[in-house]
Length: 347
Image (cartoon, rainbow, N blue to C red; front, side, top):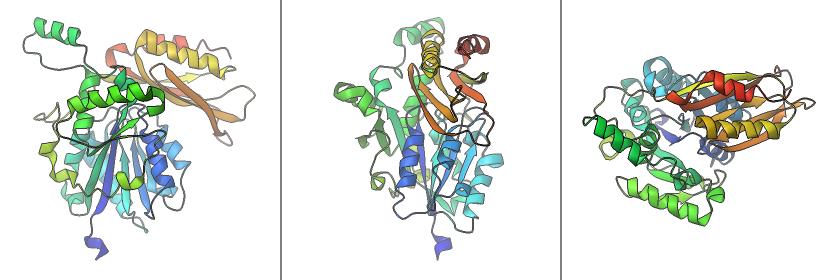
């Protein structure tokens, strides 16, 4: 009879740096008696989040149950990557009870839901729910709001133009597809910021949805798992800016990987990364860096000008290689200019 029961999948979406990996780590640490599997999708060729999650593997979610798919959007490579990955997880000797999918921060969740209609998986898997994370501080600051003046100017120049900014479109598609919205970074936004973010999100919702405030991914798993939404059968209630399109593109955004020499001052590196946000509109920076005299590697995570860094584990047998992935809107990605700022870090 177990073979006739569909395995539930939870899709975790949200913009770059909204806390998706932190939420997955929390769910892995609090599995509610479930055997979990995780698929994590990275935008770009260099993965960071998958390695972080594998470092948290345990009996409830062993390392072989954690799969990282890099270099693009999983719903753009359904036949080649996504479906085979799902089938491989379902074929494990101990089949997972629940699968978590962490999308890339630039992913549109609705095309991914359409992939669950493929015959190879439809009879075996159901989308239990879509959880959208929204960075309260960023939303309150208007980072995802369209630049009304700029859009109006574009429309005046081309009356046939009808779109918002790439940031606002991705953000709105993610929350419109959700069953639950988690308002993250509440500690950084403060009460007024949380209230402003909540109002901004409610104004964009196509239907009433629960909005929960969380810090560091700490949410009761019972509020996000076991929803039973069968979201693959409810696509019409989840509008997208890209409805009617045969496919979707990610040409509005781009990524570059920067190799760095060993550094001596993490604070100086953090300041330079913050400069990238201010001077070159960089959206996201993450990776690992070698610090002179330190046996631990430095994990760097930046969202805009907000930069965090901490030593996460010893280098051990891993080569001491400093690499950062930088993500920005396509027109703002200037590898030489980015490299000039970062490589100037004193060695």
